Length: 140
Image (tube, rainbow, N blue to C red; front, side, top):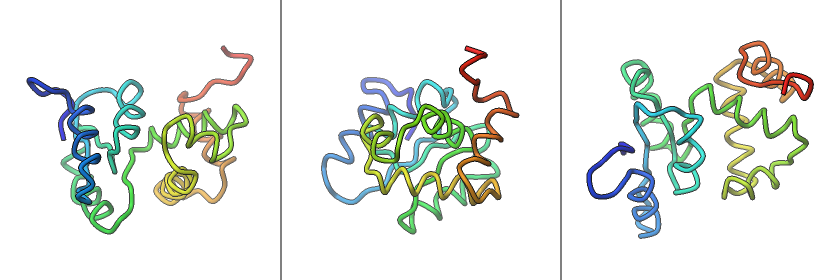
């Protein structure tokens, strides 16, 4: 699913597709920035999110993950989830904020850990801080 389409944007189309209840999985493949569109796409029911700049190397893996019932998110999603964790949000709170189940949030965290080679949430947070994807309270 692309996000920029004539007539209906990709988030709206994703929402409609998932509301049909046909079991179709939607992978958003877009040039748009994850910061702005990741959460709306997930809230609409997307099973994955991939930037077109990475599609040449990650598309097959994303499709395989989604076809096996998993989700697919870019590294940047790990930083988004880490940001939520540093604010004290539980999987349940994060899920409520993103319109996802706590199990889905747990799955995203597990996938981010596996993709980045991490074992703990603390490692994800450290990675996000070092990469400049997350700021401490003092830096805000």
